[in-house]
Length: 357
Image (cartoon, rainbow, N blue to C red; front, side, top):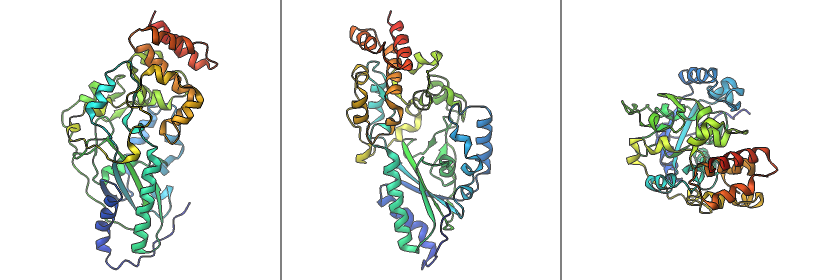
């Protein structure tokens, strides 16, 4: 889809970047930056990552070709990208660590505890776009938040919002890595911000902490080993060699973020949409495993992890129950699913039962 060209009637173009940043902060974004569309280095890195097969079943990472790394190929007419950061950590990292260390509790990645962030971020981006048009007149734009083939971390790095750390997440000195990114592709020729210097130094805590050694080298992630991939992106059976390492993580993984020294600067968010829903931040595995498909659909309405579906939800929890301390309650819960109509659920429930024999 082509974007419309800019009707540039701005009285003082030099004021626009500052105004956009001011409007963005007023809408709940903690930081706003601007990037040009030159992503040659990132394109080469992406192609190298894909050539090694590190993307696994995520075919969408390659099917769009160069449009992912060339914004003007995705949205013709794009001259600049506005990148916005919105913090999402609703509780302290200490609370997250406590949840992760309780093997009878289901651990869900902190970004997924509240409402679907895609909608929240895109709505704010749309409002920011409208405010810009009110200032400059009609201009071409499209908004994204993890919703299109966009190299958002590379764009954010170029825009000075942080640097890509050794765990491949974007890091900020102000708030570590607990934030969402959103982008506005625009026909406006905005002056790009300057990148910041990386500050990982000799630290290797994220590599050492990864439960499945998915960070195979600094700045290199083999997604096929990553718990986020195994519990979210993978549709079939979770490879047996990774099941024990998954622990009680039933949707995603935060370990590399939790051990990062920059977490001492982590900022919590007061955004209502990101607050935990349905007590998902402290529910037991047995309780979550008992959810019927009807209850699953009801409790996950408006949530990012509804995309799992009930079958993969049960699959993930069965693995976590297999890693939990033995108890009659856990054994009976697994037994109740051992004859489930789904072969995937049966397989994982029976594997978990074997761990308690």
